[in-house]
Amino acid sequence: MAIIRGCQMGLDMPTLAKQFKTSKSVIWATSNTPNLSKATGRPLKTSSRNDRIIVRMSKKNPRLTSTDINSELKDHYGVQVFKDTVKRRLRHALLFRRRPVNKPMIPEKNRSAGLKLTHPNHRNHGDLNVQGHLGEGNDTIWKISDGYWVVVPTGQRSETLFPLFQGLDRTASSERYDLAKPISPPEFL
Image (cartoon, rainbow, N blue to C red; front, side, top):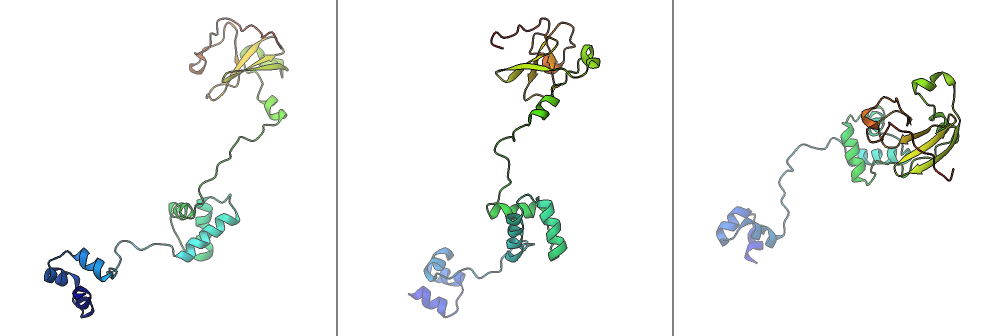
């Protein structure tokens, strides 16, 4: 009671703490008054209104990047902020960056367009017909019209196709294949 009476009389917390031989935190907890000191640190560049505008822009067009939102905010509202500030405001509003869940289905014409053999022996023979394929682990084995079987490694930075017959130049990405002998075709194709 005496601490509250001292606060009401206008005594500050350090004086009350010395008078009652306690810490300032005890005086603060007893009087339950918030610290009215001025907030320190750099003030925010955007207000709560600007934050709502950023969130509204992102919800209206989810494909806008933070740079696009930043430039639109500068043009229409005169607020120039860094693109990371826009990202932070969107994260705070639980609008995280979006990524597709699965790869979109690749059409047949695009799949067949990627199957042109580029080996020097076959460059001048035009397009080759794909007769069948066999998925094997992380790779796919394709049968080309010449009777060769080729392995298309997936998930590697390499050429499109690796013909597996004698005389192929070995590359760093094709070291895991035995390129000295051809692959025998599978029985079920």
